[in-house]
Length: 333
Length: 286
Image 1 (cartoon, chains in turn purple, cyan):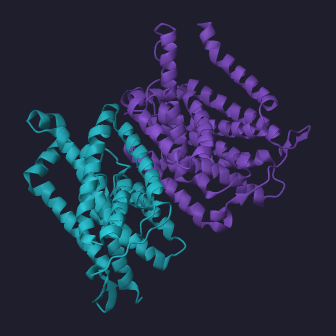
Image 2 (image 1 turned 90 degrees about the vertical axis):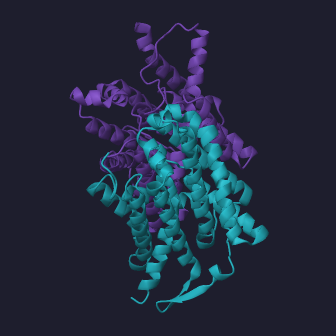
Image 3 (image 1 turned 60 degrees about the vertical axis):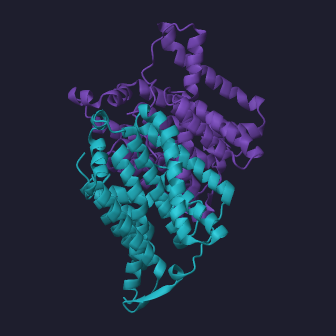
């Protein structure tokens, strides 16, 4: 029992150690790719807290990602000498506020209605980002330079990919760990049980509407953090960060990786970015392949890659009947 | 305000197109509880089929007859071989499937026809202009509105005045019971989905000459059709009529009166309806 409880912690330490070793192993090109994978992993994890844990299918997650990306870009351009911490803090504050306000409206509906409304809201944000040329740069986008990282006792230049990778690994990695911790808290468990039987949770005295709003706001802020790192990574932000395509991206990542586990979406982000990088070299039609993979998964492997891995592991372990984890059920209701 | 009548007619024409798209969407949603994200993609497919057919034959009426039939077949196949498979996993899964299909159709369209707009010209009477209430106005835009009125009337007659309509409405309430009474409910659902697809194809053919055919047309109309459904009320045909006209006119006059705000007006209306009456103007309380 003790060993099982400690397993996630051991895994986290191993992953961080592996991550720390990567700059000595990988070429800058691949280190760039890995940075992208890490920030999209956070984005996908936040999305899965909605889809996999709460059973809410959102088509508007890019509005938080894009809002975080634009907040960092706009604040770095308009406030000279702004530290990287303040820029990220502003992005978090903005997305938290937007999540709270839109959540109040959007969460009035569930299921298909919710999906439809989130898509419409995402389109609204996209339309504003495209038309509000003076702030967002419209079609041209915004170019920024990564500021140095002030640590109090010293200042680190983040201009090179090695140092920025390290920064991303620590901050985004910590955010992913925090999301995992969130699923273990009473709040996270409440959300899970609400998905299973909301009536009963209400009857037991839980205010399910408030819990859902808190979760929605939290995932929005986390997606905003991922968006902030997106701008810092590419040193560029355009309206594509807030477009419905960005929601599609995270939906594909999450679903291909598997909504049934916490780590599935991270695996999905890894596979998606690698496939995107290599398929786009071979063919211009790579989105078509991603779409075909997605539909194939929906039809035949609703649990995604993590379902395959879990059944393979169960097979190897001789079906010792470990019992299904709480989150291991695809979003269906 | 001498432009007033022109913009009013523009609004009505767009409302007609919006109704043709959202009627199919709301029908499938009301009957099968499936929010069909691929609906607008099939509308786009209809527009591109029509473009190719017009290039080959130059017969608009032929295209208006043939494309809906093609889309009917596409819809029937999708329902029979894909949608029915994932039905057991629940509505969100069906939604994900239609979303994936929309994504694939859009990519195929870009592949086959290219990622740029294609203009569709129609000759004859429809391409002409006509003199009404003192202004010269394109016949085609009036034609769109007439088509929408015709389709809306036929749909309402079928749903509320025929035996088929009774079976359809009964299947929504209790599909198991209707099945037990000896009606083939899966076949009924396949028919509804295919009819929705045919309707989207019809709308696509009509949209071609008005808006040109381009790979983003599906996404553009989908958002507006969703807003129509939200404002009008989920699954309500009457709501779709009123909301289509509201949004068509709002789009049209928005450009005239508040050019800077025009993109946001439709969403503001939607947000207002959500705050005041979350189930939509004509929606039943859930």
